[in-house]
Image (tube, rainbow, N blue to C red; front, side, top):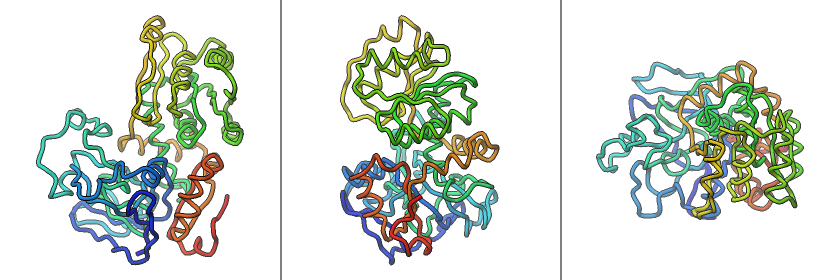
Length: 384
């Protein structure tokens, strides 16, 4: 089958002879892929990896051996089910919850027999000690014609276009962050960073009935896109942290600061601004993945105003289900979601027009989707 295969850092290859996956377990389902998006994690695997992918010669706790089909922002349809599957059937349109955790050890006979890690034991498998990711080593991913996964990991949807459905996975990342922050409907929120996750956080907040949103983002094109989604934007370029905090507070619904902030940039300035722009008892949530470096942090910035500082990692299946329902019920407008799709590209052109393009011109794009559909083979890139 056609597939985009990870061989090593900087070495992604389009192959037309990759083995087509088959159902091997009673709980398996086989999915025909319609679209798969590029995530920032995929890009880091290409430029800096292997990260989630096990290194050559290494046996990961709950992942397959090195390499395989990349991609985890997936929409598709069920074409075959295992003998024990009853919740879905061929023809169902689905998205896929793509974590690999302690609960998935059964898929890997070589994995050492161990009890559940503390996070999985408490039901928070998104923070599994051995976290893996579909399309980044856990199992083959969605940049292919077909994939096989466990039925427990698929979420049905209806009335959502297949290309838009490929955005549900990044929306689930943001949805989880909003839930972790204990967001209350009608509250005000500040988003630091207008990249893909910053923009999907707008949708997650809309799905949770936000009152007022401000997005702080230096790139003009991203601010303009955020404004099309009906939010207020702010350009922090050339401003000191103190100036940004003062300006942003003025943009809040009452001029006194925000009840919630979400750092989707992951740099020291956004960390500090997101905390200082809060009202008393406000909550700052880190959504970004940081480099492993320490930064200055002053505990009394939290204590004096009884603020909450927390973080959010990945998602659980319920985040997908709730995101799907919010789209189906119209709380997240489909026409607005379409604005996030920069281009649709056939798998054959995915390396040059997808990965290399993002490496060289990341700020020009929000979400590039890959597809094995023949209709995209005839165009170099179907720009939206």
